[in-house]
Amino acid sequence: MRVELVRIGNSRGIRIPKPLIEQCGLGDTVELRVENNCLVIAPERQLRQGWDMAFRSAGASANDEILLEAVPPNEFDREEWRW
Image (tube, rainbow, N blue to C red; front, side, top):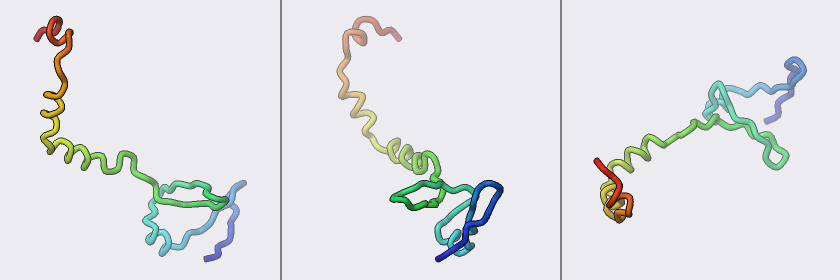
């Protein structure tokens, strides 16, 4: 698809057709980067996307007890630590 650059003050811009915006899942904010001399416009990545599911699945496993038992007590644990 060919589009023209339009003047926006001292800058230039493009108009992105609505079907392309919807197809690419673009919102009000996008990420711009240059790859191989091409301008890439991508949907804004959500920070920590998927972390909530990772924490839920990690908490559901019984590996925590295994990890705690695998660490032998050290000198501090045996002689200095007090509850």
